[in-house]
Amino acid sequence: MTTTHTLNDPLDVQPTPLALLLLGRESDPRSERGVECPGDLPAPSDPDLVERARAAKARLGDRVFILGHHYQRDEVIEFADVTGDSFKLARDAAARPDAEYIVFCGVHFMAESADILTSEQQQVILPDLAAGCSMADMATAEQVAECWDVLTEAGVADTVVPVSYMNSSADIKAFTGRHGGTICTSSNAQRALEWAFSQGEKVLFLPDQHLGRNTAVLEMGLTLDDCVVYNPHKPGGGLTADELRAAKMILWRGHCSVHGRFSLDSVEDVRARIPGVNVLVHPECRHEVVRAADHVGSTEHIIRMLQDAPAGSTWAIGTELNLVRRLAKAHPDKQIVFLDKTVCFCSTMNRIDLPHLVWALESLADGKPVNRIQVDAETEHFAKLALEQMLALP
Ligand code: 13P
Ligand code: SF4
Image 1 (spheres, protein in one colour):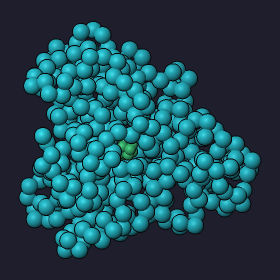
Image 2 (tube, protein in one colour; image 1 turned 180 degrees about the vertical axis):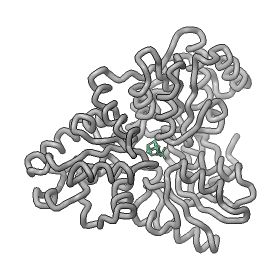
Image 3 (cartoon, rainbow, N blue to C red; image 1 turned 135 degrees about the horizontal axis):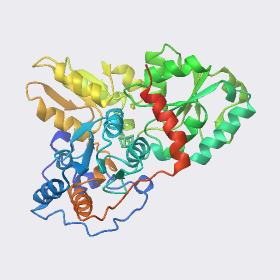
């Protein structure tokens, strides 16, 4: 049994089904899309998994390029040719025109973006189709089209530039491209907003209200009163036409279920436990958490800050647990703890495990690609406009 971990020691916990089960988060049926693996997965207990992954990768050689997001499991990251946040991985995918297969160890919207940014001849593979994202699922194409109608009726649509977080479906990216907007990631949200406000008077920010609010208020000097929240489950978004006319930032009511778990209590508690601790959080965290923290930044920024930190310094990190555990291991000269007292993996990122990776690689090596992610041509055309706008941001 692998039950030795306690919830008070999150850095010791493996993302096993049991650990996820303990928190009632062994699965997330909404974002896992109820997808069953269509093939014969090797058993997780197969002692040859590592060897099989190595052998399949070697058989494929330069024909395959494996991308690994920072929130992936250690067992998967071990086989990644590059690791990165969603911005870096989008660029890395676009920069490998020679690779016949891009195996994306991340979640569905990232694989879609890679498909959009790569050529028709290249195939993007997501080892487990159930690896969705609950935040991306909070904005559907129908809801966003309805929102645009509401903005049109209020007489403001002409002044609005959509800015969509990378963590959104290809349909939402296409909506953004159709309306002259841009994609952003947590690494370039400020630059994206600066650009958007140079093009129009207002921004519709989708789907993460926290990244939108944190960037607008903490980086751009807007006030909380400049922001309104559009609730897709309420008629008219729950806003009056006057509220829409007065707003500068129209924030979609979406959030990340992983980063949304960190609270002001988590920050106060860690400061009481570890005097002098530096609190460093991801901008998907709630506004009050980011305000109470000492530093905020994307996953790449978090990694760089810890690399540059002096030996002996202490850090509490508010982001996904797989990354925090790896950082703690990589920097034994610094004290690095997880911001919350409980385990906090992203259940959909964790869907990609070694058995799925082995299955995907062996299928490719046998000439039978599985789990290809393919965006249709029209969606791709408009989504690409918005993605290319992001890549061209100053
Ligand atoms: P970044 O990779 O842009 O830091 O975003 C974090 C995240 O939640 C990815 O799903
Ligand atoms: Fe989605 Fe949050 Fe998981 Fe990222 S960490 S994939 S935003 S649920």
